[in-house]
Image (tube, rainbow, N blue to C red; front, top):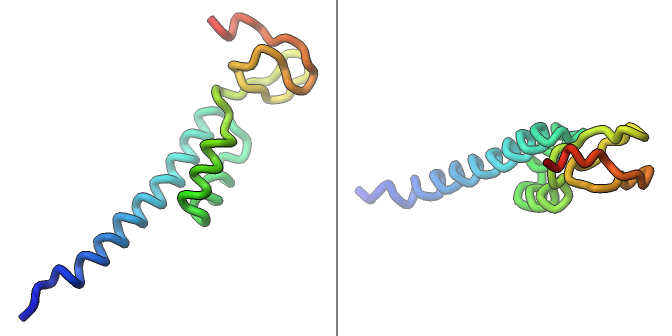
Length: 97
């Protein structure tokens, strides 16, 4: 009778890989939701289907801080930005304290 390790090891590896894959999607969803990003659910769904590539794309594209509405034009803007990229007006400096 042989060792069960050659049968169990690949199954265990596949299980761990699936947990990491789904964990990446859960991280993307939670982080995008906390940042107030629109489309957080779709980022997570994209990460489920693309795995590490979706996670990398999200990390590159995500907002640096929370998204807040511009007090002049109402567009969602990164709260760390000094100027609104849509209307070019300076944002409230009280956010940076």
